[in-house]
Image 1 (cartoon, one colour):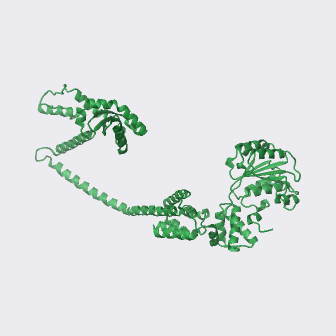
Image 2 (cartoon, one colour):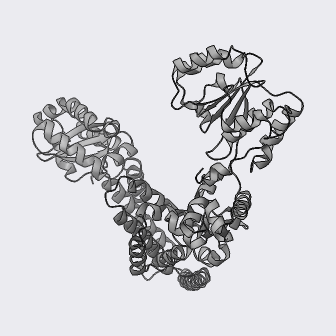
Length: 581
């Protein structure tokens, strides 16, 4: 017979040969020892972790001529024939190609018959999640109450796709990914038995590429041994898998950190000339920065790296990056990796991704360099505070000197003069704020509030609101709080009940939409002016009642008259008070 692939030659034939699934092996062996094995098992887990191998070993253990025992002897006729697949009572079914209800009905009919060659009929259904809903329904009753001589072993990589009714009728065992150390030890054992020379770094890299699958690791070792004529090294494993050396990772990471665009493009071009694919390079670089993040954040992060084999060599690079920078780099690479799946020029997208990261980091560095260190900021702030304190002290000294003098040259007291200046400033600020609420051409708006043209426009306001609602519901929600109160040839004045509605409506984007709708509905362009409704109502009432004038009757001295005038202005405001001698 010709050469047999290593993963087939080294397929476990007993529970002791299995790697990394001790929690499952112990449970199955205990049940076999006590003769308490179940009629249905569910083996789930990632590919290459030993699900089907464990199922065949269990089939041999329950049918071994020297058992049932915790280990099959692999010497009796039953064990050897089950290993060769020549026993009719041990049936291995591929559910991916036998997924219909008819195949399961045929299985259900055959289950009734007693085994002819061994003690138990064993049905191993691989990739069971591929069965149709009808097939699961057909299997359900038989799986729950099979004959005493039948055992079902279901294997799947996607247990979440199985109906809960199926899972509840099985003893479930979850196979885990094989750890890196266990994989490397197993690969070293294979190399020793197969007379293959291999260095530790090469085996570690093979184990990391296998993603916890022992079968994948042995297949890669077989491929590497064929390529290297029995000598497996780290560099040769890189060559056959299309991976990137760690030195190229480091060179790219340093170039990105230093914003060296020329080096970034040179390294990428070198990798492309070596036959590396852009998507594979992107994937490897993403793993590299992930490993740097683990090294930086986790005290013993070296054991958690995915692709790095010489962790201490790259610890300085990890420390030179901030954690936020590494998160940003990983996020950017992941986003571009997703876009690369649909790109016609993946190399260009790979280059753009790294240039984008380099320029982003450059902006961060320049921004941070423009800010003084914490110590310098503290010293500078302290100097400014001291200078302000000196200025305040000087002003207080001058004020005290002025108060000591008592009066000014014009005969008024210093305190009174200061109070008058303060009162005048406050009144001026109040008047300014009041007038700031009014739109331009306010007097003309007041004069035209009852014009026939405005009444016509007011009748069309419902159409304006409806059109604004069609364009933008949010804008309509703010505008509906206002109502038109007057208009000019080129402007429409809308008064609002709430300040927030007015402020939001006056945003440039919202104003643009409203003015466009005004032109569509009213037939000509209008400028939108706004004010508060309470201010307009005060103005409107004052214009409607001109006959009553507030008059003051003089009762006493001249200072009493001035007192009443001040109180009137304070009560009604300067706009509503008319002073007549």
